[in-house]
Image (cartoon, rainbow, N blue to C red; front, side, top):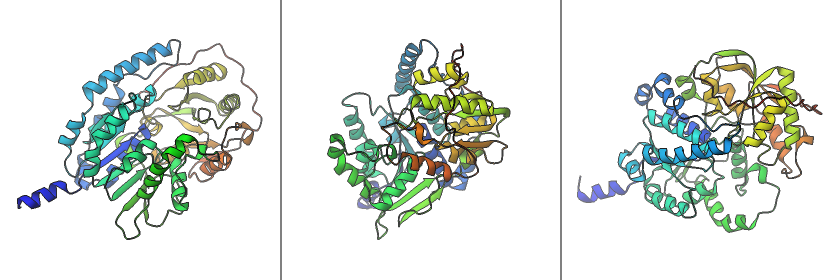
Length: 438
């Protein structure tokens, strides 16, 4: 090869960069990589017994009991130390990544619970042979400038970009830098359904629970970047830009040129389980209160009534649920509150898990039946009564939530509780527990 050819080859786009901001996004990138990997690479991947201990042996998540604030601070301090000692630096990531390798870039959030789950998922990613690059993207006023500056080179060199949240302003900004002609969007939960709809209709990218209101000043300032990102996520009519959506959500009509690949959670089922199934039911939490969609008191009443009706004993909290809300929930309902250290799909697959999983409209009503395929576990979903919605809820919130429930496959649909009676207060404290691996 001539020197000119060598320089041209060095400048040619190569490798895959994946940007994730949540544990579920990272899980779905692993699912995508598993499906896209050559057969030899898939066979060489570690088994569940080899991959799980790194996550299972990691430090526990912050407690919900008294003193949670100090525990949370200690966990964050440990997190910072681990970042410095255990994560690949930017230089290491660039040096280690071969042309066809996948480099996972974690745009770390500030929430300790999310950080803890991301760290455990990062260990699983490394066990699969992927490079992980941990970026303190929100670690101060100048952090975004350092992060974007450090990623500019890899972004321009990457042949393929994988993203987990097309609504993220951080990700949208990064998309304006890349020259990659191959873009992949992996699931970020039910938001994927909204993304497909907005892309097909040529609308600006706005999260479903924020739609209906007028754009704020920050929205207007960021509008050019958002519009540019939407164009980058639109396939080129002559095939010069390929867009793939990797999803477990029901997508009936994708925009022209968008290739849809089904996520069946094959990696999860191959690496974990089958789980030990216990008697009774488990209840899955939601962050609808935190996003301002559902009233707190109504939600707590519904959880208590649902638990009493179906004999649920455990409540698996969403990572965004506040400690104050969960403390009150445990006291008023008597449920054992559990903060999972991994996405619920992996927790359920590892077990132990109840024979019935109860949920409100959320991503898990679509993903859990796939992750638990071949087991006896049943997933049941209860609709959100319109009376539970807050005044701040988007005008289309009820329709969107009903669509999440109505399009779910292999789930039992429960009738909404119209007027649940408040559960009596119990003199108990919430229990912090992480389920042990099967």
